[in-house]
Amino acid sequence: MSKHYLVFDTPRDRFLHAVSRGRLGRSASRIEALAGIDMDVPRGSTVGIVGSNGAGKSTLLQIVCGTLQPDGGTVEVNGRISALLELGASFNPEFTGRENVRISSLLVGIDTVRQKQKFAEILAFADIGDFIDRPVKTYSSGMFARLAFAVAINVDPDILIIDEALAVGDEAFQRKCFARLDHLKSSGVTILFVSHSARAVQELCDHAVFLYKGECILSGHPKDVITQYQRLIYAAPADHAGVLDTIRRMGRGEAVPGERAVGAQTPGKAQKRAAEPPREYFDPGLISKSTEYYVSRGAVIEDVWIETRGGRKVNVIRGGEEYLFRYRVAFLQDASKVRFAMTIKSINGLGIGAQWTAPRGEGTGDVAAGSVATVTLPFLCRLNPGTYFCNAGLEGQVDGEPVIMHRIIDGLMFRIDKVGKTRTDYHTDLTCGSPDVTFMSGGKLEPQSRRTHRT
Ligand SMILES: Nc1ncnc2c1ncn2[C@@H]1O[C@H](COP(=O)(O)OP(=O)(O)OP(=O)(O)O)[C@@H](O)[C@H]1O
Image 1: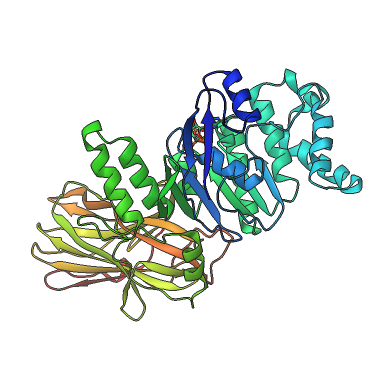
Image 2: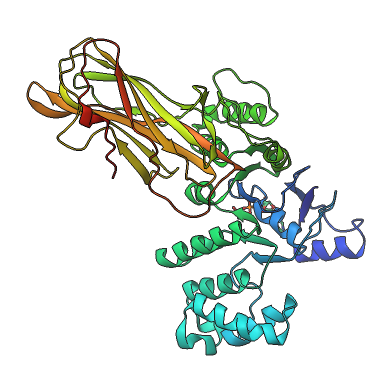
C-alpha cells in the first residue's frame, strides 16, 4: 500500500484545492510517505520498524490503526488493536486520569463489570498515586507515559502498536514496560514497534523492517537489519549512495560480494519457515561481527564451534536439546593447571551461563608448548528463542604466573528459532554431562579437571 501527502503553501491553497478537487489554487508539493509497502505480520510476531526521521514509520502505523487511510492498496487487520501512537493522544487533557481510563476502556469495548477489574490493574501498573484523580493536563510527560502505557496493555489487545512511546519515562518504568511486553509476547499478542533505539528493537523484536523514504528496503532478523540501518545512518556523505545501493540489493535477496545474506525477507516467510519441521542446522550467514581477541599469553584459540551430540556442526539450534560447545587451542608455551571456559551471552552482552573444565586453582597437569587441545563443554539449551553469543577462554600457570592465556569475546553466535522444545522459564544452569579436554600431543589431564565448575 502507499500513501502520499499534499503540502500547500497556505491554508487558502489547501481550501481551494479541496473545494475545487484540485482545479484551483496553487499546486501542492507531493510527499510520498509510503511507496508500495507489502508485508505480512504473522500473528504472535513482534516486528520492529526502523528508519530515519520522515521514513514513513508513523504513517505506516497510523494506517494499520485505521486513523489514516492509504491512497493505494489495502491493509487487512485481524484482531483488536491497542495503539500507543502519540502518548496519551486519545486522552482529553481536561478530564482526570480516572475519567480518561474509563473512556478509553469503553472505546475498545470493555464492559463496565470488567472495567472495575481492569481499572485496578491499570492503576497498579501506572503507579501515579493521587494524580489519577487530577486532570491529565497537570501530568508530567512521565506520568502521561505511565498511564497511556498502562491503558494500552491492559485492554486485552490482540495487536499492540507502539510508536516510540517507551522513550518516555524513567528507566525503572521502561524496564517494567519491557517486562510486560515480554509477557504479552509470550501470551501471543502481535506487536508492531517503532523505535530509534537499536537495543530496544533487538531485545524485543523477532523481525525488523527498514523503511527508507517510504520504501521497505530491507526486512529480516533484527540484528541484521539494525546493522545495516546503522551502517547507513553513520555512512560518510560520499559513501551514502553506495551503502544504500548495497542494502537495497540485500533487501532484494541478491548476493552482494563481501556481505552476508540477511535472514527472512518478509515476516510471512519467517513464519512459514517457523512452521517447517523442527531441526538444527548450520547457517553460514550467522557469523559474529563483534569478535574480539585478547592478547595471547602462551596459547591461541584457533576455532570455536557448536556441534550436535552426533558430531554435526550447527549454529541454529533447538531449545531443550543438548549440544557440545567446542574449541581448539594451540599451546605456544609450556603451561600447567590450565582450565578452559565458555560463556553464553544475550545479544546485549548479558552473561547467561558460564562453564569451566575445572575449579579455580585446579586444571590440567603440565602442557608442553606445541600441544593442541580440543575442548568440549556440553550444554543443555535451556534458552528462549533468540540470538546468543559465546566467549571462549583459558587460564593457567605460565612461567609460574597465573595468567589468562587467551580469550575470544563473541567468538561465535548461534540462534534458537521458535521451534523445538523451547522453554519460557529461566534456567541459568545449562550444564549437562562432563566437559572434556583432549590433547593431540604433550598435555596431561588430571582427573579432577574433568569436573564442571560454573558461575
Ligand atoms: N500530515 C502530514 N502532512 C504532510 N506531510 C506529512 C504529514 N505527516 C507526515 N508527513 C510527511 O510524510 C513523511 C513520513 O512521515 P512519518 O511521520 O510517517 O515519518 P517517521 O518515519 O515516523 O518519522 P519520525 O521518525 O521523525 O517520527 C515525512 O516526509 C513527513 O514530513
